[in-house]
Image (cartoon, rainbow, N blue to C red):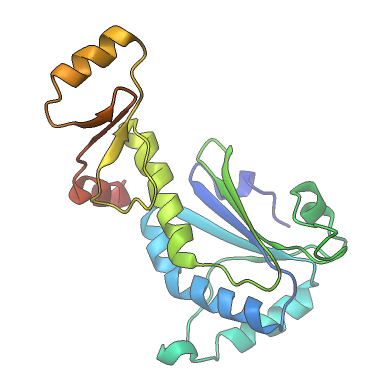
Length: 207
C-alpha cells in the first residue's frame, strides 16, 4: 500500500499516469523514464507511475521492460514503483481520466509535487502522444531553480541561459533598475533578465 505523497517524504516527487501496460507508447515511455531515473535521483526527485492495470499485470510488464534493449541501450532496472489503480479511484481524484479520450483509462498525465507536497505543475498528453522526458526534466530543474534563486525562467530556458528578474513593484524601482542595470539586461521596464551560471544550478543537484 502506498500513500501518495506522504510516503515519499520531504522531496520533490513526480507522478506519471499511463493508459495501459503492454502497449507500445507506454512501453517506450517507461523505458525512457528508466533510462533517466538516476538523473532524477540526483535532483532529489522520487518517481512513481500509476495506471488502472492490476498489480499482477504490472509485475509481468515490469519483467518484460527490464529485458528490452531499447534504442541500443543496455537493459534497465526499474527502481520506481508502478502503482495499481484497478478501480481508477486515484486516477479520477487526480483528474487523469478524461472522457473525450477514454472513460476508463488514464491519459498521460505528469504531476510535479514539491517538498511541501504542493502540486506545482501538471502536464497532460493525449493517448496517441508519447511524452518528451527531456522537457519533463527541464521543467523540474526550472522549478527548483526558481525556488532557490527567486527568479522566473523565460521561454525555452535551459540551465546557463539568462533568467527573468521579478517585475519591479513600483515606477520608482523600475526607473532605478533601468538607469542602473548592473548585470541585468532590461528590454522594458517590466522585463529584465540577468545571467545565472549553469554551475550554480548544477550545485542544486548536490543538495
